[in-house]
Length: 74
Image 1 (spheres, helix red, strand yellow):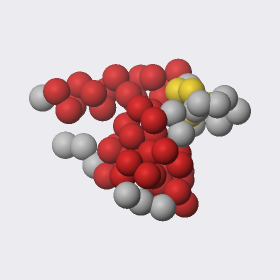
Image 2 (cartoon, rainbow, N blue to C red):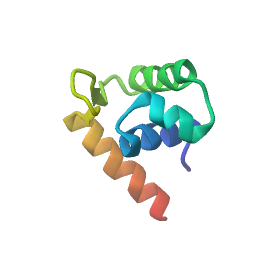
Image 3 (spheres, rainbow, N blue to C red):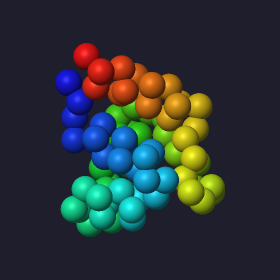
């Protein structure tokens, strides 16, 4: 089962930006940022390199993306 936080993560990974993901999800940018922050806190890892533009996945982010995509495929 994929949570709302997982869906938000996927949208950010696909869009390469929090603001673009927010637009696609019809949510505010702060709401998407908060969701990502909570997910990272829950997992205990940083999922995106925020220094890069567009956002780039960290190694942990790559692994989580793979895991999330596998769950969606089931």
